[in-house]
Length: 401
Image (tube, rainbow, N blue to C red; front, top):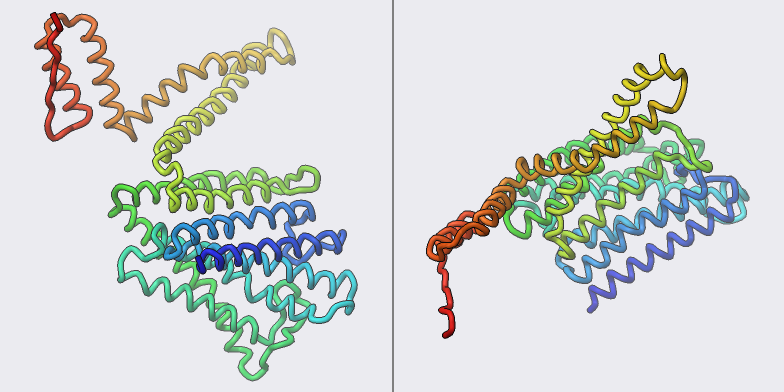
């Protein structure tokens, strides 16, 4: 009960700090804080989306208090909400209404110090600790300590580094110690490469765990792998999106933020085991409809080009090519989906594919079989092929007279 109150208390602090950040967004008007996405409206949306991490963390910490991932999400979310509120406060007291409130420089400094530990706590440690909150084996504990020490070094070195601030590069650190400034700067600069190396080792640890996992743990890992795969596949679209804006909001920021929430949701489903075994259905549908979308889009472009080459000399510049291509793609949708689904089943779900074929074949023979003994033998063979039981027995009730 005490841990549950502590978890939801941290969550309440995250919500309160997020509300403080939203208030400063309104008070500051057109002046955006130093870590703004470029749109005040989307800054507010992003701040609310980040609450998905501490919310899932509180749910995990309540149900599984010994799992470190729930607490990492809570403390990471708390750091992110603190950073956002401090930057809003700093923007107000340093830019909007200078000198009206004390401690603007200190607020900017603490925001500099907490952003990387907050990010690292909720992400870099995740790969080596997911899903049970422990490393794959005791041999991987060094990686957890390396990341923890690296984040701690960044926090304290940033607070004491006498150089200029990160979010406000025109301001000097009010707490900086001049005597060892070069060493503090070196420590700050070294933390990012160490984290990148740690991330690579974390992915290796995740792969090792996935290779060894069975049963429930393997299903849990599939949820994280699926979220990561979707993120990696969609990320190249940022190059195509570029700087496109809708109502003053960068489309790339919206896509990135939406993808970011996939991770806490997938991890929450995996650890809390809510609809855990639906992952195979999700993966299958993702493969089928993702491939279908790509193939239909490519087919549509080829048809448009082909029909234009054929029809433009006859009809001139018209929409006939587009209309014909649309009809052709619509006609291809169902057969192409069926074909892709068969290919996916055959390649990734071979046992189910073979079982389905065996059952379909048995159903066809069942309509023609008249010999009860032969039917029983065939039925036992089908059960053995599709389910691989240790023993098969068939009991037939005698007809009543």
